[in-house]
Image 1: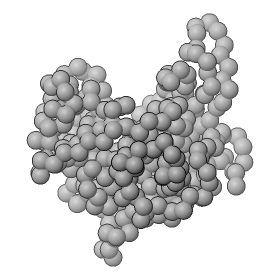
Image 2: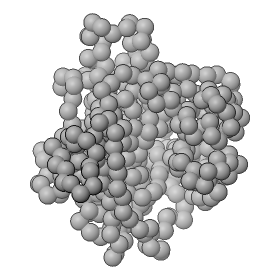
Image 3: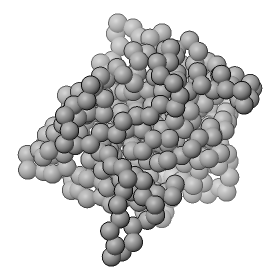
Image 4: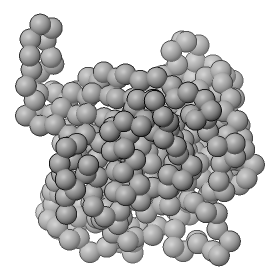
Length: 370
C-alpha cells in the first residue's frame, strides 16, 4: 500500500493557522465530520468520452480515498486537527483508504470502524475535455457496525452535508456541545427545493451552497439576492459562483464580501467544493475577516482544480506558499489583486520548490514512496 504522502506534515508544512487562538482547555479536535469514504480510481489523459462498444486507453491513472475523505484531507492539509467517523470495508480498498488517511494525512480515525464482510464503495472517475464522468457502486454499511458514535467529540467545528427532509441528530448534539456547524447541500432529487425542509439549518453558523442551489432554495434569480435571503436564516451565507468567484453575507452585521475567481488551468474540478469549505472553515476558526476567509477559500479551491483527483488535489500550506512566491515575482500580476492575499504573509512558510508544483498520484500495488 502507499499513502498520498509519506509524512502528514508535508503539505501543512508545520503551519498552525489556529496557533493564536489555542488554549489549554481546547476541544480534542478542531473539526469533526462523518460520512461515506469511497475508493476513487481516476483515469486521466482521455482524449474524449468513452464510446459504447469501444475500448478507451487513458494515459494516466491514480487512486485515492474519496467521498467524505476529500473534505477530511483538505482540512488536515491546512493544519487542522481533523477527526473522521466513517465505516471502512475489510477489503484491500478499505485498508488502503484507512492507511492513506491515518498515516498519510494524520487524520484521527479513532471513531471510525472496519466493518467485517462489507466491501468498500468505489467511484471510477474519467477526466476529459475539462469534464469528468463518474461511475460509483456501494452499499450502506450495516448496523450496528456502521452506526455513528452516539455522541460526537468536543470540537471547535463540524462540517455537515444537509439532506432535504431529514434531521441528523449528530448535528444538533455537536452544536449543543459547542461546535460551530458549517454545512453545504447536494442537489435536491425531489425537485421541491424547500428551504424549510433543511431542518438542521437552524444549527448552522455558515451555509455554503453553490449559486444554482442557493437560487432554487430561495426562489430568486440572482446569487447575491439568494445569499441575502439565506443570511436571514443563518449567521453567514456563502454562495459559490464557479468561475465568477464567491459572495458572502454576514447576517448579524449586514457586511458583504465578494472575491473573483483566480484564473487557473483547470484539469479536474473533483473535490473543489470540499476544498473551498475547508478553506473557509480554517479562516473562520482563525478569526479572519469575512473577505479574507472568502479569498482564502477561493484560492485553495483554485489550486485544487489544477490537479487530478479529489483528496489528492487538496492543497496545503506548502502549495499556497509556492503559489504566493510565484505570483509576487511574476511581472504580469495586478498589484491591487495581489494585495487581496497579503494577509497570508505572516502564516506562510518559505517555499521549498518552484512553481508549478506537481503532486504525485499514488496507485494501489506499489510500495510506500519516500
